[in-house]
Amino acid sequence: MTELTEAGAARSNHGAVLFYSEFDDPETWGEALRANLPGLDFRVYPDVGNPEDIRHVLAWKPFPGFFAPFRNLAQVVNLGAGIDSLVGRTDLPEVPISRLSDPGMVALMRSYVLFAVIRYARDIPSFEQAQRRGEWRYIHPRPLNRIKVGVLGLGHLGAAVATGLADAGFDVRGYDHAPKAIHGVTCHDATTDRAAFLSEVEILVNMMPLTAKTKGLIDRSVFDALPRGAKFVNASRGPVVDEPALVAALQSGQIGGATLDVFWVEPLPAEHPFWTMENVLITPHLASITVPEAAARDVAESIRRVSAGGEPLHRVDPQRGY
Ligand code: GLV
Image (cartoon, rainbow, N blue to C red; front, top):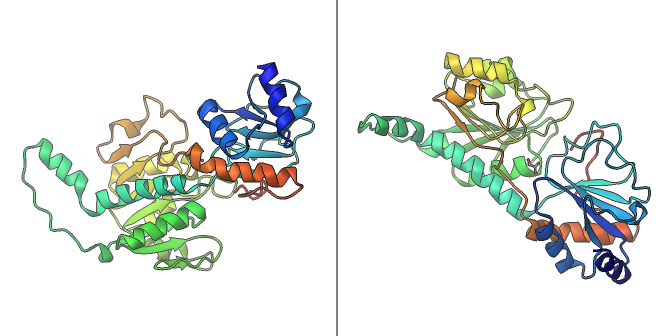
């Protein structure tokens, strides 16, 4: 290992890369990065070697104090799209921080939300229930362009989701605090009356990042502003939603169904009421995952750029939270 590391360091002028993740496969990442940067000195935690060699950290949910030994750090790459687990911590080094973004991740997210929205739009949960009763239950399909879908959060992934839904034929309205322009999507910003926006939305999709400002933002007032029986899809982060308020809205029928990929606590605790709710579809936080082969190209480019004194790709603002 030491020999390999030294040979790599000799061949690469980028400094060493340290990988830390309990979720991602270091071998796949190492291969994908070396395919772009031959000879890269790629180290996998806890085999750090000399901490002063480490110039680039690729990490997903590093533990508190993780960064302390790396005095020559030049950048941190968050091994995911959402940076909420990195920001807000007090030990974040003062180096550029970036997130992953790759077409594979975008396509997975778009496909998840399309699936969830189409499932409701085509009344699939009703057919699933009717089948269990052995019942031929005809529900006349509604034209998709009459079904109003609202997307909250029009960042990189939210915009791709909104475009995908519009391309599929839905009447899509997006809401973001900042003004956005997306072809085929009616975009609203902070100047729009939120309750008026929500009052027309039949299927609401949450694509907001988790920040200090969005925590708990989707609360009872949001659910109450939707038409009775509206559906809800959460594919971003659990804590953006007031979970007890969602449980209550699902129990009362104010929300007719929910497709949830993310939760306050993951894995979702066994005793959580969502598990036994007929009108909830639970998936275990996989709406979108990183495809290392695709993402590594941009990470390698960031390593090149930062080593040359430049800016990484997909840089985030830890203060803002995305
Ligand atoms: C997954 O949730 C991610 O942020 O990439």
